[in-house]
Image (cartoon, rainbow, N blue to C red; front, top):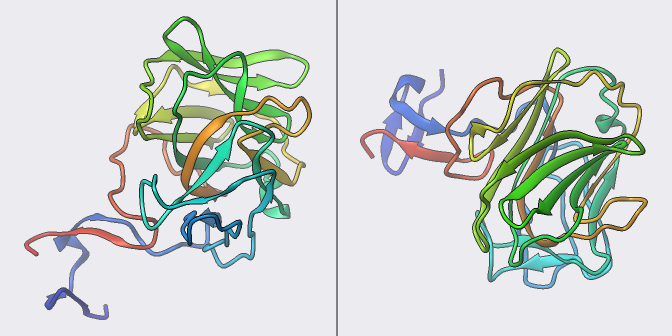
Length: 238
């Protein structure tokens, strides 16, 4: 193994590295760090697959609110959208994981859709509180519904991980609700963040560190990373 020099110290064994976020691996198909200059509409893909995001409306980088790096993606709830079209999203019935950090400044109203993947809408819904997280299948109603005590202006890590036809939902590394059967055959090649693609149910807030993988990264509770994907978060003894 090559010896890495980190802050003047040699690291020759992974056993000495705690909280390591490994380099971007081949399973990472989309990776948006959402960094850049304030007001930028450029959201490059850091996975190496060229899946740069496109924007709709006033979607832009903001540097005043972020979880990692220099910025996050802000959508204002008035027709904004961050999206991509790529064959990497057409995973069929295979495993996948969608994950990102998000934060919102107001309680969502009815069906505020923060993401659409194929025919599935991912929604925050204010139910006099607590807020609920819904996954809706177009034309067939709620597929997954669980309450969660979200707070305003607080970052939350969301992860949706399918393994062998079983979907697990995680908030801040802790599974929300039970396992769900999810065997849908994804032939669709798009994902929308901040607004769904058909009914125009907008969501207002910030999105950071979005990653789509074609593996099930999480099948049980996990520790959150403390650095962007591809960077070391902590070195023991440094």
